[in-house]
Length: 255
Image (cartoon, rainbow, N blue to C red; front, side, top):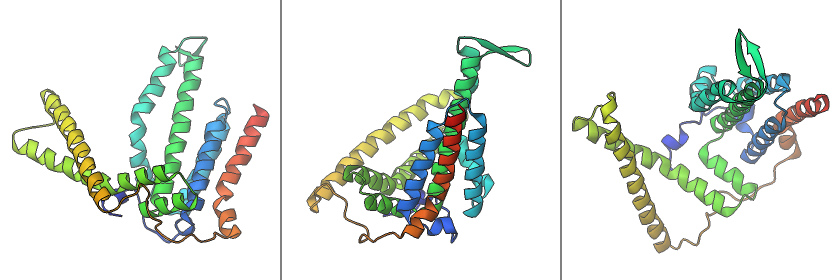
């Protein structure tokens, strides 16, 4: 599997989190997100507990807070939506700093921001401590559907190809007088995105034909022979989801 942009989210290290088997980390991340999603939105303290848990994992994995914060900015559009909900949703209102805000909108906005941020943070922790190849290997060991593994593998392999193609197209536009800082260049940018999609689609067809000519039968080969993961490794890796499950249980009990 190629490297480059596919490894942009991976931070190599030798911490206890990095050394865990990939299938353990994938399972732990899934269970942790499941606990976050299942938590009632009215139990505010529970989300604080999840945040402390993620912060502790990031500290153990030695992931810089600035690195995490920069990549959490991808959820800004959802944050904007969450901030608009208290002003647009109906139902009973609550006065905050002299402004009447929808109670349902406040809860819905908090729900989006809290669960979205925690889910994205969990995904970033998984990506930072697990190389793309290891993620595919972990999915194979977990017996994930072969079609899903194939899609993820090809996506990781050709993400850098598409990004490089987009960079070349941008340089070509700029050399012809395109300046993305001005509003009237939006049309050219949109046409460039359309051209990139068409080129990517055509490249995908050519790659598929090349794979068929080399004996492709629809399944990715095993990256490594399967091996047994010890119970000690599983218990270590699932300690964080177990703590999250305790928080979820208490939150459901007190809801």
